[in-house]
Image (tube, rainbow, N blue to C red; front, side, top):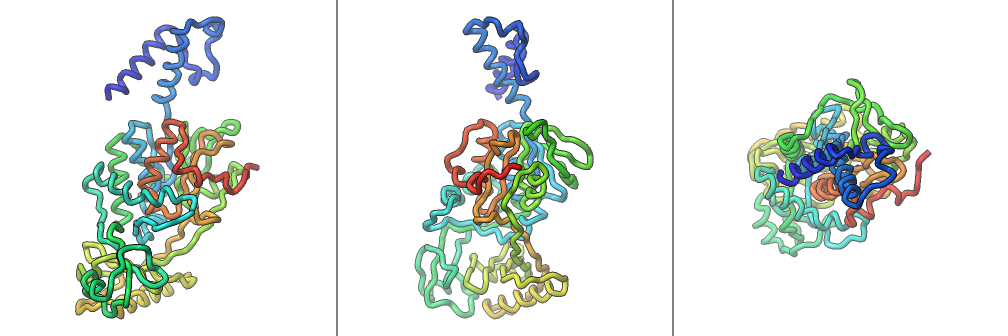
Amino acid sequence: MFGLLALRVLCQASTLRGIRPSCATGVADGRHRRYRSPEGKARDTAARCCYTWLMSTTIIVGAGITGASLAYHLASRGHDTILIDSDLPGSGATRASFAWIGRPSTTALPSAPLRYMALDEYRRLEQELPHLAIRWSGALTWGALAEAGHSVHPGQVTALEPNLIDPPAGANFQREDAAFDPTVVTDQLVDAAVTNGAQLHVGTPVIGLERRSRTVTGVQTAEGLMPATTVVLAAGNGAVPLCRSIGLALPVAPSPAMLVRLHTTPDLVQRIVARPDLEVRQQPDGTVLVVIEYRGEASRSALADAGRRARQRVLESFRTREPVDVVSAQIGWRPMPADGEPIIGAERDVPGLYLAVLHSAITLAAAVGRLASDEITTGIEAPELAGCRRTRFGQAIS
């Protein structure tokens, strides 16, 4: 708070001395261009910097887990932040996520630095937001889905997952892995952002990007123009047509994933369990989340069949005397970049535009929220994001 007050005082004092920040008019006052003392130049620079900082506004389009994390991290820095979505927070691909977060053993992917830090970043978020609803249960994996971890034999598998009917001969246990309800955590991040001063606009579709020359200066909504210094596209698949409208090719396509929600007595499934034909975990309220293969379902009856299929697999895999009911079956259309890696960063050829289209959004949201917010507020590129720039696909501005 003291630092902010000092910046305001410096800015006001510089203005009173006759210095008009160039960012306010585009050019400095001609009377001051002929000669400035070193002290005057220093005051002028300070005035310009603080004016820009104080007047900066970032609009985030998309209130899924990515946009919510960005809004929280920006607002907690005192940055003027507006979060916009056509629906409620977490209503899109976020809601259809299995929401399993873990640490890879080894990877050469461009996003490797982000994936390695994912768990630590969520631990940090828990320290900042103590009520964040993350369940650190660990993950039990085997077969083609086995992840590197502590090797466990059948007796240990049974101890970890006592209701499992047919324990595998061998499995791996990742002690650090965790999961959470993605809509609950998204809401918690949005609430924290609003508490820190962010504005939230729901039911507000963004229908276009506002530009002056090549610079993005805001967004067009049904309610009119909303100006901004930076526009962040965190709208998943919705970012594609917005980019196309300004001649920017974004190589992202929808990728389907089937998530079924069941309900039964709590503690049927103790951990995250993943094998080739089934990924399953349970939330404290008894909700069981099941990932099964997508078979091209395109009707409500087909979704109902998928729900029954998931229920049958759970009944064949876990021992229970309690009823297991199908709650819902949902297709999540994940935004999938052409190479499966996230697209993050400021567009050099389109000033004012920042992209944040993630796969996997749940895993990476905490890390990207912090790092991208640093880039937006300071203009300094984060080395951890270097492999995630859109330019890896080539320059595609028409």
